Structure formats: structure tokens, C-alpha cells
Length: 273
Image (cartoon, rainbow, N blue to C red; front, side, top):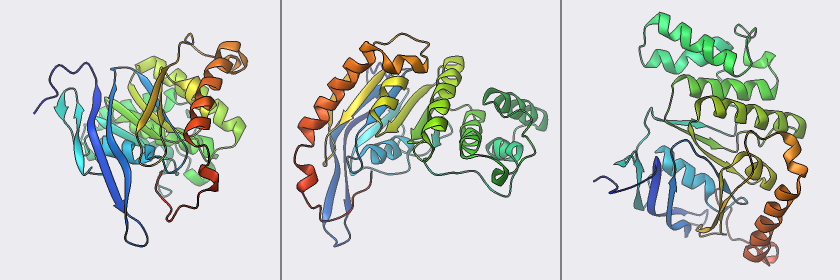
């Protein structure tokens, strides 16, 4: 059944999901979560580890089936993986035995596209992510930031309608992370794909997003959705602006209220992000 009258590109309705802890007890990761993402929007889901944000992203991607609720893409049910939903993971997902060029072409070849089209798309996307000249390089010859560009390029090459990103810059040093954020915004501005980006970094969420979804502690719910009314295009300098600081204070107020006393609690099991 279609999501009647939905204005969203991607949407979930009434998502609840549980998992089994190490002792066999049932842990509620998400409870009755509904969220819509507009076409061309850059949406960030913000929260600390254990709040269910990665679980929600994987449900969007079709990698996890929720106990209750539905996911819709363009108003149609979309509970499984699909070429229109591209995923970029936190961990390095490059194939070490393939060159940059071969990594980017991998998904295109699976789709059995004509060789000339594969060559053209790969060349264009490699240039878009700033890896021209490194086509024949192997991942071991690249920096962490460059390998992440390969991950993004491989996903972009398949031209998904929605790009789902799970803390893709979490393992990078601060300098590289900042540069990759700016490069991602530049790439996004060229194609205006719908992006759902999971992070636990408040500054990153504000800098990237049109809206920031603030998750509650487990069981994960949506505590608030904050519109980021900062002008685009954005430069790194905006992070020291008064407007940026005001949004940051508002977000931190949410976390101080939501997670007050959590540090003194001893969780029985380690929960997924």
C-alpha cells in the first residue's frame, strides 16, 4: 500500500524494533518512530551511541527488518535493499584487491551496463570526488580520507535516489574530517541527492544539515527536529559564527536534559548504535 499523500522522498512510519542482548533479554532499540525526508534534503540524525540511530538508518536501507512499521520510497513500500538506496558505511568498505577505478566500476558492472557507459560514469564520478590521477591506485596506497572518497564515489556511480551515510567520517582525524565534510557538501550541491546522515558529532550535524533529528536515549524516539537556517553554500568559517553557536547551544540543551544521570547508570548490555 502506498503512503497516501506523502510529501516525502523517504519515509518511515511507526517503526519499532527490538534485539536480543547478550543475556538473551529483549532490548527495545526503537519505539514508534515516524520520520520523513524531503526530496533533495540533507537530513542528519544526531545522538550518542545506543540511541538507535544506526538501526534506523539500516531499516531505511532495507538491511534490518523492523518488528513493526513501514518504510516508503516515493510513496511506495520499500522494506528491502534497492538500487535507489545507496549506503556508505563508517568502516572502510573499499575492496583492497581492486584499484580505485575497479572499485567505482564494481556496482555498475553488476548492473550489466554497456562497457562504454561504465567507463564514462566511473571517469566522471572519480573526477567529482577529486581522485583523478589515482585511478590505478590500490586502497593500501591511499589515505583514509581518499579511501572514503572511493566509498562515496562507488555509491554515487550507481546513481541512487537516496544516499544513506552511517558516520562515514567517524574514523578520520579532525583535519581530514573537516575537509571531507566540505567536499561532501560540494558534491551534494552538484546533484542535490536526498541524504540521510547519521552522526554523534553536533558540529558536523549543524554544518551539513537542512534539518537535524535529535534522538532520545534507548528506547530510541525522536525528541526534536531542528531546522538549520544557515545560508548555503557553507564554508568552514560558519562554525565560529554566532548563529552556529546558538543552534549548538540549543542542541546541547536537549542532550543535557535527555541524558542527565545516564553516565551513572550501568547498562546491562552493550546496545547497537
